[in-house]
Amino acid sequence: MKKIDKHIEEQVEKTLQAFDGMERAQPKPFLYTRLQARLENKAGKVIRGGILSPAFQRLALIMVMMIVVFNIYTAARFFINPGSAETIPSSEQLFVEEYYPSTPTLYNISQVNTNP
Image (cartoon, rainbow, N blue to C red; front, side):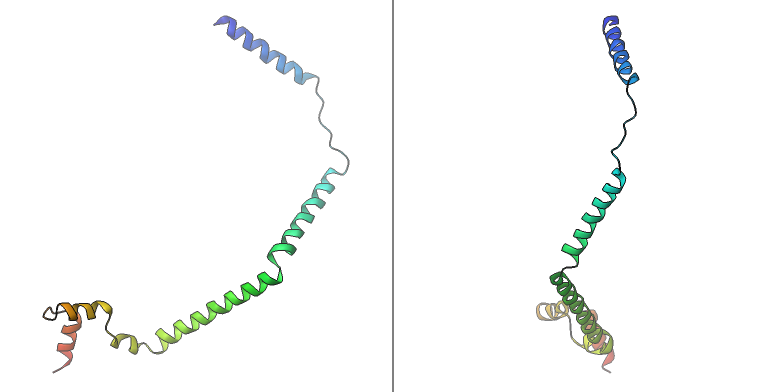
C-alpha cells in the first residue's frame, strides 16, 4: 500500500513540475474580431435563408388567416346564436330515449315540468 501511495505522489509531483515551466497562452492577433465576424455571418445566414423565406411567409400568413376564420366561425356559432344549441338533444339523450324509453332523464324531467 505504501508503494502505491509513493508512486501516486511521484506522479503528482511530475505533473505539477510540468506546469512550472509553462507560460500563459497568447491568442493570435484580432482573434476576438474574427470570432465576432464569423458569428454575425452565421446568424445572418440563418435568419435570411431559412426563417424569412417567401414560402415560409406565405405559409405563416395562410395559417394565421385560417385561425382567424375558425375563431370567427366559432364566435358566430356559439355566442351570436346560443339558443339553437340548447334545443338540439345530445347523442347521449337520443341513445337513452331509444334504448331506455321508460327511464326518466333530466331531459325528460325538464320537458314534463315545462308542459302544464
